[in-house]
Length: 635
Image 1 (cartoon, rainbow, N blue to C red):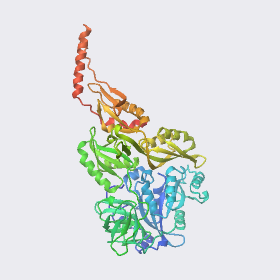
Image 2: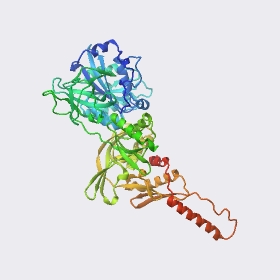
Image 3: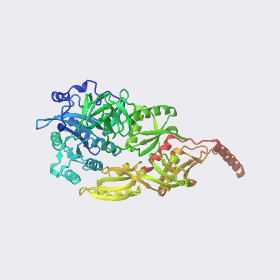
Image 4: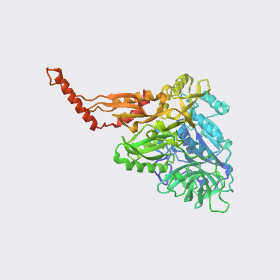
């Protein structure tokens, strides 16, 4: 995901980034570089272990960016990335480095996201490289996504260069952490590089190691042209910009191209490299990383992971696509409704514009009796959902209400029909359902050994099945659990952090669908179902969830002139009930004595009036009531 269009990647004025020191400029226009002098590498790490800071030091050391133009987290171009200190979108940059052997090398750095939601993007970025810097915080040690990204790199056949970052911190423990990294990748602890991305200490040695150990790109420079799309963005003036790694052959400006998976055909309007701003060139040859602009107006036509080839020239088209492409499917769904119903067209326009930059976001119109018109949106995960919602509110000035996140269920009906249900209110009648299958994940949790019991207790509460336990070091344990995705999308991560005092880290991957005894839990207000409060839960948890939800709603719904029953029901069976008591005017206050029948007569008259009022009245549900669902896990 990336904010709206801008003329240059780094956000500086058009000519500002062109001013460089003398050495890089000589090589920038010297034509294609010999493949043996090209190195493509990525930086992989857990969140907040210093990827972007190390990238800043590499840009400074290679004189790609002058000291005057330099700023922290230069490659993180979005405001959200800079505020949260995370990388949301992959970035690429070309730098030139004169090594100790006197040769000048062309290095392509691809800075990848660190969060589990963007694992597919990370895998495609790694597929565009031959090597990776594995950055580990010298004070925090190996974390869950360190392990996950290491396995991704090993599976991709990359040369791994481990680095201990932040050795300048007072709390750094390089000896202990080097032992953990050695246990993870099998490299001797003493050979692991010790660096500081903040001060620049050891960064020169990192670049020398890169050149010595990372192999130059393979591929046939004279063969049919093939390139991997590892990212894409949308510019409203120029169309889709594809970030590519050329594997074979040469791509030239003006050539016709074809995407092999989607079948999209277009011409190359412009081609170039990132330095770090976009710099046009005449061509990109085998082994090089850059961008390609086609003029297409739909980012879904050039998908991440697809293979580009040229077309039109005799024998010039590749026959076989590069491996690893897959359709990115949303895993978490929620409804987005404008608080002001008049803003519905604005929300639709904002989603259309955002989808141009974010091909992983899906949405479709949805109508709710309680909330009015809105959209059912699909996301890669909770962080992706949070970022999209914040961008909609911030960049498009919208006030939104998000319903409870849910996952997609596969439903088999008694007549054999198969359904995919993303919205709890679309769940069929229980009598027609033969089987419901829910998505499962394989979760990896790394925590200090004293928190093993707390983590196990949390996972078992969430219907987890223990799959393994491994000591990374005498102090740190890796636990593996099979968990339903529906159990972790709400507050699992918050609970994990609070129960382990912030020391645990989580990584997960989808492991398939499994039959489960799921039921649809409806909420009825004064006998009417409120569709926006419906949810799909496991039958064993339905009673506890129903009781907690009705209690929350009783506190949130204002009192009426008559009693309002709040019921939680599975089908026709009510499993929990609370009542919002009515306001009561003391009609017998004026009776200072006399027979009791006079008082009863007045009370009966009041009761009859309230009954008539109930028949024509309508319960107003405030916006805060819908937030009660999101707070269920807080106690």
